[in-house]
Image (cartoon, rainbow, N blue to C red; front, side):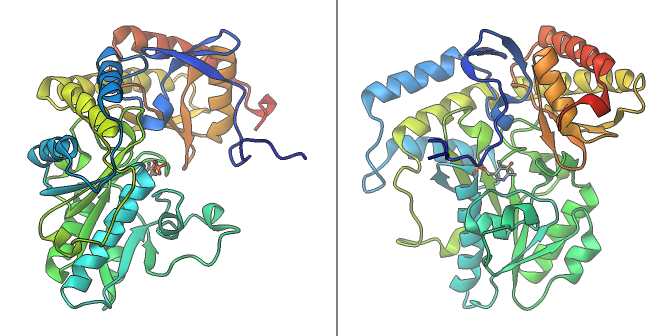
Length: 397
Ligand SMILES: *Cc1c(COP(=O)(O)O)cnc(C)c1O
């Protein structure tokens, strides 16, 4: 037998973390890494956060799980908090981002079905988007590398260019149910949708009675400097998928919707055994306790601005390596002039700095939201040492 016990679907690197200390990870072999990857924008509170650990420990001892057959004081409380803090009137809790997007897709289809329009099932989604790895969510993305070996895809998705309002408008037809869009593409390379694009989608949705779904699995929960990114574009979606940072390491997600958008999500239409269990709700509460206030959000924006301006001053020293910096808050993308994977590996292996590669030749800089200036200094030191010692051709891919 040559297959590994862990199904070998990830090309895992040689770092094997066994402990987390705030914004650092310690590996099995004792090395200490600065974690500006945050488990792919998940560990919003860093590692070993006392408030999150305490909340999970207390809830684990009290009640972990009962299923959705019973009333949920824990779920009601967190749902009410999210409703109070956002555009939404109602929330469905999931265990992952892909499941939150699945719920969003079903909510949009059910909206039209409930209105007697079963033929309005098609979502217009955007090239280089990432919505997850289930059959539904890979079907929602045009990325062929995720489709290979898994055909046929689910019908009901049409892909158009991101940030191209005219293309989105032209794609609307009799079967269109709505738009599914990341307001800031994450895996696609930290590409921020323009105000005109996102506001234009809102206007088209209003005009044609379509659902506007925002996938904020990566950019949501304070990552972009507001609790949800939509707040920065002066519009509200009808449906929103949230996950990653919402549990800050505890696996959970949420699908948020307005009352109107959720009109088809009635008894028996959807479910999840684990979704919204008391343990997950305790984690979600603890995260909101920390991030859902103006002071914290202003701090995220200020730290993002500091990293960004230091990066902008720095990258001019290596014009053959770095192109530009983009993003919002602590969701930053450093676009390179070379393939990013080798440079990400070099920062990791030679300078103990963790970042994440993304599409469009971009390195994602997604630190815990609780970094302070010492971490920003350490980041800049490691990055500049890495840039100085990087030899593009000699790096393994
Ligand atoms: C990570 C991600 C997902 C999928 O989340 P999982 O928890 O891995 O299922 C969906 N959408 C976006 C924008 C993401 O970044």
